[in-house]
Length: 220
Ligand code: CA
Image (tube, rainbow, N blue to C red; front, side, top):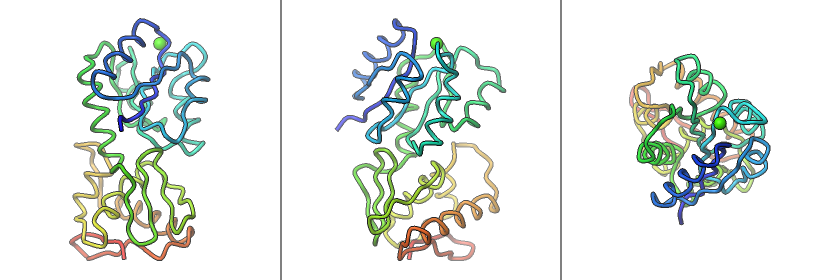
């Protein structure tokens, strides 16, 4: 099944190029010409979002923030003519996963989408014990109860579920959870893992994240 990509871009010529190009790259793109339409079409089966920052009715970063507040966890790749460091950083702090300055090559957007989808986790659903992970829409359930996870928590849980009780090394978790080259301290990883444990416990999961000190973690 081709991953469904919601493309929110008001420039109709660029939108057409994106739709055609993404189809050629084996995605299933769905167009939206403004932020309100993007919000309406961001359903749980959307695998990733391509989101223009400069939209007629809203700032794309506000759209992303609203989606995150609604529990939309799929990767978001921003497109923007503004490419100063502070512009890019504000895209990440709004909950974006990647930021591509215009003009760009479609092949690069497609590669970034594939990388974001890869980081987002496996597809089709993965299960270990009472946990089921669905990369489409980033749903996680524990014994049928939804576990509300942030995008980073989801990316950390995915390799642990995929390992089905085997050990996952800390550096593999960091690679799964954060963009390449990001500096992630041991403390940061531990904080995310303890939040993940708390959320699994609150959802009533029988599994938790165990620590093999100095080596890695496993679900058990
Ligand atoms: Ca625009």
